[in-house]
Length: 122
Image (tube, rainbow, N blue to C red):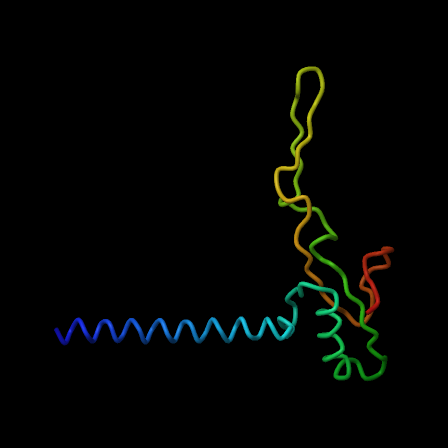
């Protein structure tokens, strides 16, 4: 009987600890805190906020002017792949994955490429 009661108490304690850990993670995301260096943010505003936070500490000789790019929409990948098959006397093309990946924004102090429309100033 004591053994069963000890197991139940242990399981309840474990569940409470896991729930507390999940709540902390959800609260951090609700506050809009940046995910961290090198991790894409879900919005351009989030990437610009993270850049503004770190800009004063970067490159003291040249002012950091924040730019952001949606890395998930810049390049094609297998998630957006199209499949073309024969269909009677022609062909048919269908999208096998998502039409577009969810946005993922990264920031930099200057545009990394000169390609028009890729980097947007914050």
